[in-house]
Image 1: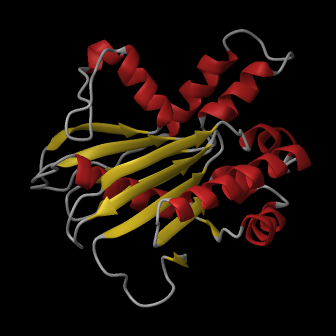
Image 2: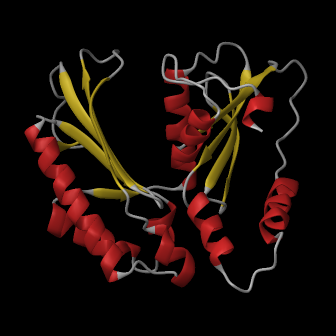
Amino acid sequence: MARTAAGPPAPFPLRAAAIDVSSNAIRLLIGSFADPGARAELIHAERAPIRLGHSVFLSGKLTEEVMSAAIEALRSFKETMAARGVERYRAVATSAVREAKNGEAFVARVRDQASVELLVISGAEEARLVHAGGRRAISLGERRYVIADLGGGSVEVMLVDDAGILWSESHTLGSVRLLEELSRPDEEPGHLGTLLGEYVAGLRIPPPPPGAAPLGGFIATGGNIESLAELAGARPEGGAARIPLERLR
């Protein structure tokens, strides 16, 4: 099985996989591409509920227990990819591994023990991938959109159009990180509201230049956002669910 960057281009149809080692879980998606310009047909989806961010956001390090569980999940994913005939894959890790003092050691263990090449990506790369996925799921047309990608350890906020990212910021405000804040016995009631207010107050989306395209709306991505959409009764159509803001509130 070759990595994305290795070897000559694979012939089509092509089976490819994506592995996301995030702060809240580890996910595997396998898709089939009929030709280079085709959308992927989803063949397999799997999620391992391993919360790497739990230990990192408290102590700054990945624990031996969570690293072992993650490696076992990745070893299982590698076997699934082989059984499904995957020819290319990309495996990325985000804020939990990025911030962990022993993140590099974890990446080396994943390579040695699970035979998976894991790439730790920056917040800027996360934003680029979110924009690329958003363009495929939603026709941006001539308008600008605000995209928020809520993960376990961080949230990426960006202003985009169909051509690219016009502005972006990455904040250490993820669902797992907030859960750790709420779990601290010394915190006073209302601390979460104060914390969120501070983050929102510091968010400064630049004003549009003269003649800029109008704002088309807001796009949110991530597992927590998908759960909110389900709670609001919104069903995905063409890869995205549409929710009126009042219903989301």
